[in-house]
Length: 80
Image: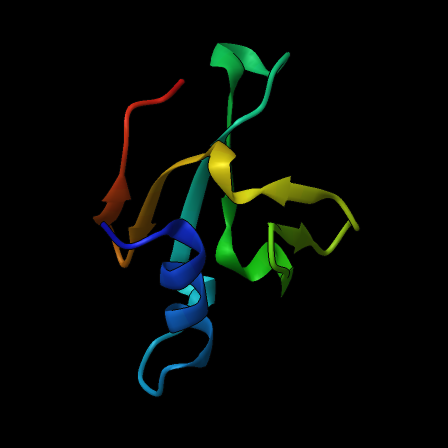
């Protein structure tokens, strides 16, 4: 299985792909349904263990449970 980090790196760096067209769903304790979704356009950096949002918040990759790209699910695992 390809990791969320690998997928996001591909969307950011591969010609013809555009990370801003992705939606990343992740576990966010305290949010409604303990879940939050952000646009790939809100991702500032892809670090080794997390991705950083434009706000400076760092989200660990293990919290990602779904990634959609251009309306199609390209990554999904059971939400913990």
